Length: 553
Image (cartoon, rainbow, N blue to C red; front, side, top):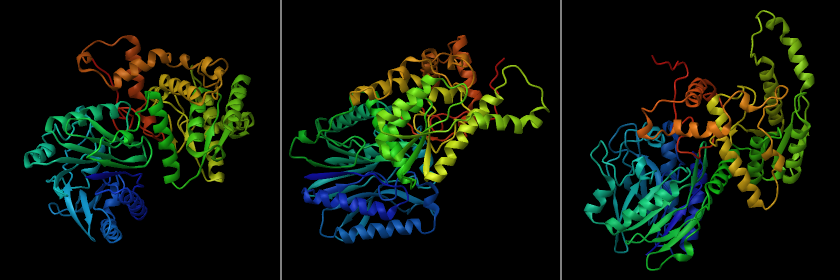
C-alpha cells in the first residue's frame, strides 16, 4: 500500500483556501500512485480556530468544503482529512474528527479524545469548543485495518495518547491495538519546540515496534500566531525502523510505500538547536506577516545583537526588498552602533532611514515640564530614558502605518523575564520574533547564521561589545540586571525547575532573578505576541499573577 502524508500549511479560518490546498496536494499524491491520502489534524479549518467555531456558518462551511472535496476526488484516492464536524454526543459542540472522503461521499472515522487540559495549552484551548470524543475508528482499505487517532503531542512526558488513560476512561491507542489493526494513522498538529522532534521519533518508533504495527504520523507545518509547526511527518515499519521523514518547516507530499524501504524519502534532521530555531523563527515570521495580510516589515536597528538577528530573520522570511531598517540615534548613541547598524543593512541589502530623536526629546521635555514639576524627582528615575524608547516606538509604528507594514519587535526572553524594556516603547510591535530566545541563545543563533551564510553578515563588533540600551552615558545592561551569562542559566532553571531542586534554598542571584521575573508579569501581558520555540514560553507555558506580591515569612 502507498500512503501519502499531506504535510499542509493551513491558514486558520480559511476553509475555502485550505480546501484548495488539500485538493492540490491530494492530486499530486494521486499522480504518485497513492492508495490513501492523510492530512494533519484540523487541516481543513486550521488549528486553534477558537471562536471561529462559534460562528453560525463556520461548521456549515466546513461541511460544504468536505462535500466539495468529495465531489472533486470522486475518481481519486480516498482522503482522510482533519476537520470539525457536528457532535453526536454534546449539543452545541463540534467534534475534532478524522473524516474519510471517498467515492463522492464523506463519513466520520474517528473523533479526537480530549483530556481536560494540556500542558502546552493546545487541548486546554480546544476543549472549550469540541466535545471530549469517545471513539478512535478503524478504516478498512485494501485489506489493511488502519486505526485512526488524532493527537497533537507525540512526546511521552507531555501525556502522549499511547500512555494516557483519560478521565473519560479511554486509552485511544490500546483500544485500537486490542481491536486488531495493521497500522496506526496518527493525524497530528504538534507545535515545534527544541528537542521535541527527536523525542517524538523515539517514542513513535517504540510504539510501532512494541505493538508490531506500521505507524504513519502526519504533522502540520507553518506558523499560526505564536505556534510554529515543523512538519517532518514520519512513517515506521513494525520493527520500529524509520521508513520516511517529511521535510522540515516546509510543505510536503510524502508518499510511503509499505512494500519498500523508503530510504530516499528520509529527510535529514536539523543539525543543531540553532539551525532548528532559525528555521522555525523564519517560518513563523513569514507566515505571521503573510497570514495577517501584510508583505512588509519595519525593524528598528540599534546596532545591537537583538535587532541584528531580527533583521536577518526578516530578510530570510520576507526578502530584503520587503524589510526597512530604521536608525533612531539619540545624543547617547555611540558612533560604533550607527556604523554597525548601517554595515548590517548593507550586508543584507536592506533599505534604511535615519530619524534622529534629539529634537523630539527636547520637545517632550518641554511639553512634560508643567506636569513633572508637580512631582519631586527621585534617585534612579528613568522617566526620560523611557521617553526615548517611546519616541522610537511612535516613529516605528507611524512608518508602519504609511508602509502598510508590521513592526517586528526585537526584545529577547531574558529582557522580557526581567522587565528590562519600556512599555509602549521598545516593547511595541506586532510580533516578538526572538521573544522566546534568551540572550545567550540569541548570540548562539547569530553565530550559527554567520557560519551558515559563510560571511560576516552580522559584524564582529556586534558580538564583541557589551549589550547596552544606550539611554544614558556609559549605560550597560549589566547595570540593571545580572550579567546574561549568570542570568540565563538561572532563568531557565526557574522556568523548568527539576523536581529534586524545589526545596533547595535560593542564592542571591536566583532570588533577584525570581523576584524580577514575578514583578514583570504586567509588562509581559502587554507585549507583542511571541513566536514560541521553547518548552516553557511566556504566555502559554508560564502564568503568574499581575496584581500579586510574592513575599514569604
